[in-house]
Amino acid sequence: MRTAFVILGSLLILFVAWPLLRTVTASGPAILWQTLLDEEVRDSILLTFYSSFTAMVIAFICGVPLAYLLAHVDFPGKWLIEGIIDVPIVVPHSAAGIALLMVLGRRTLLGQVFGLFGLRFVSAAPGIVAAMLFVSLSFLVNAAREGFEAVDPRLERVARTLGASPWRAFWRVSFPLAWRSILSGMILMWARGLSEFGAIVILAYHPMVAPVLIYERFESFGLRYSRPVATLMILICLATFVALRLTAGRKTMSNEQ
Amino acid sequence: MQVRDLWVDLEEFYLRQVNLDVAAGEYFVILGPTGAGKTVLLETIAGLHQLCKGYIIIDGVDVTNVPPERRGIGFVYQDYVLFPHLSVAGNIAFGLKLRRLDRETVEERVAGISQLLGIDHLLHRRPGTLSGGEQQRVALARALVVEPRLLLLDEPLSALDPATREGLQRELARVHRELGTTTIHVTHDFEEAVALGDRIAVVNEGRVVQVGSSEEIFRKPGSEFVARFVGVRNIFRGEVLPGENGYKVLHLDGVGIAVVTDLVGQAHGSIRPEEIVISKGPFRSSARNSFCGRIVNIADRGTVVYVTVRVPPDFTCVITRRSLEEMELREGLEVYIAFKASAVHVF
Image (cartoon, rainbow over the protein chains, first blue to last red):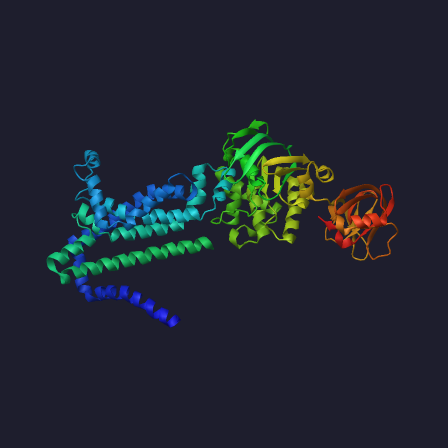
């Protein structure tokens, strides 16, 4: 039985690993270097990373408190809030883009209010951040909630009796204990943001993030021309992902010693 | 510390009209069965639950609306609840650091309390690597180091194995003698209550049903519930001294009872009524303890009968109704009682 399971599982792994490996090995180092020197490519990759990071920071500021409430407080309609947090995972991302456009578009109320402060979403970097935030916030909120749920509420109570205000009890006890989960949620969310295409393409085709650039080059110039960009993106994402995972893992281990 | 007319409603537990007076420096025990609301009562005193009615006074100041961090309370839970992300030293220093004391003072006081509790060799360890008894000492040190006006202990010994429990119980008594911190200790174990408490409050279903010294509670249970909960037992306080043949002797007023124990000094002994045999003539059996006394009370409980024999002190034993009739026992009659040294539980 075990042999059969190994074979079946391997098929799936192969299905993921092979195309990635093919793409990565298809372009030689010389072409990759040349692509990296292309300013358009460099800009779009930086924009992608930066936008996804901004979205993550926003989700962190608002999402961690929300996750804490969901983990420790019972209130009517809690199931609804939890549902809303999960919706972005199931909605087609192009549809999410349309939905955002309906609220953040130039002629909408919100769009105009933000316009007063010089903040434009359509075909602008804030639009990219908004799209990334929308489709990936679930990852951070859910991971943080699981992190807080694992913290015994009595730990905070003990901290309170020892002289900690509610804020300090949170920062000194619950937050550090949930930090591992929060961090892994942040990494997951950030990675999910990097790969976003559907919602961004509708809200802000320009300036081009890397996934849009890959698509554009494929459409206009074909496979040969878009492949080096794709390779580059896969390599960079993989490298950062592994690096972040390693540092997170190490931190965890030192915590447990 | 005073609690007046306290009412609390939580989803699973509630408190009804609770009144308590705990004197400064007293070791006060709250005794009750599981689910009686004991933990809720402690957490309410600590300020962790909203009350519907009533007020709480500590050191003459009404603290009903004071948040827990400003009540000057130390809290110890049954299962320690240590901060897993901090070392033992970090756990103990937690409250001191919140008070923004300088590093030297913090280290000094952490060292002082760890020495008192015998955990100074564990300071650099993580709580997860300690045994239950060690963890509970750390929790105790963490609560005591901030010099609380009131120490609240929620079943502090219940999660420990019997040997560790006995050790830590003596430790609690010693620490209380040395520091004199007013202490409220919650337990469902009556022996723990007797051994530690200056006074005991028995709670049931969210209400305080009786308050008094252990003597009063066990000799004169105020209600059917208290009598059932504490059980009819023979409890004595005395001094354990070395005896012959590996036995020790628990000296009460006038009588010495042979016992088997590692303890010495002041201690309690308890004997279950069914362990005592009664007879009209002297015994020739191997039982270590046999005394002559006079029957002072016969309480009929249906199928069994409780006979109290004054040696003194009073021993209560249980016999069947049939034996009572066969032996023709009656009040005022002189009888002999006997029990094994191993039947005496010393604590």
